[in-house]
Picture (spheres, one colour):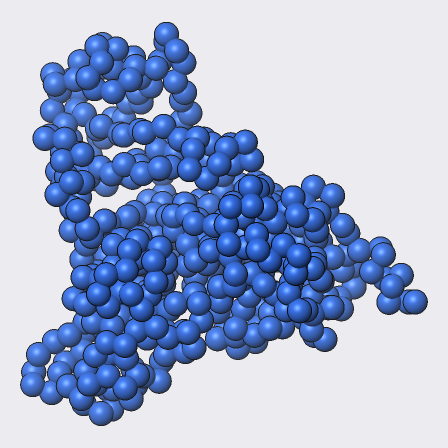
Length: 433
């Protein structure tokens, strides 16, 4: 009776209740077949000693459940690398299970189009047979990612809305920073889309990325499953935990990457699998050291093979302990930032594409660069997650950077100014330059 009384006093989130409305948006994903089996339980009902974070960092690694949100879980690895960002997303000092002041509620913060927004949830989590059925940690008594996933689902309207997405979107939401994507397939098509005056997007070179090894996030995505990638499945995202250049017995060099599969199991049977013949090319001590670093769900693969099999690589810009963005190209902190809003208004600022004579009416912002330096431009488009489906709600947008005379009050028509050296990509939600 005393235990029931305690539970009756715990917070219950009326905005995101333990009902089908919180699980499903349109019942079109595979999780809908589990509708009759899902129950909601608090952590102390699932295990005897729940905790937010583990004492052993390995126990805090995330594992994907029935929900197809590997894109979100890959982005979550940035929080395990950066205490500053973890404390930003999950503010410290919140009473946990067994502590004085525990009320069954937790507050999370996500970056949404220019500002951090709070999302509060109760700790009732979807379960099947008294076990978490969506994301969970390596240890069944650790709940940081399950609660974070619930808050992110509430932000989007339901768990089902997290089915399929872009790692870059989740990285921006979790850091307030930037993420850049490299498409490794159909590069010719991508360059044609950028236009004749555009520089092709910089070729991906892991060795040139600054600060990413320790503080940034790298993930790779498979959109289809040809050849060896069939072991990874279709439409799947994986995390790059580290990469290292090693010397072979014959004096050659090979770059190996340690990959983590959110499924929590090893799924690669190539030369650098646990019993692959690639390890015979290295000195025994080197092989043993690298193999000892792998945890459950991790495997090694050489760079050439990986880049051949995957379709896309996403890199999240590192964030310093002071919360400053760090360039992945120069390694320098980027302390100055400016946010500016704009909108398309029919008859006023909705100028359309470059082919339209009204193109110059589109929103534009002027930047004066007094000295040579690095500038990052990110375009974000607002969208109503609760009112639109995953596949709708965003218009195409692109960010042409053009030089202009000093007297720039008069807009120069397209073609009369020289485009600045830049890279340009088109994404559903953001464009990074």
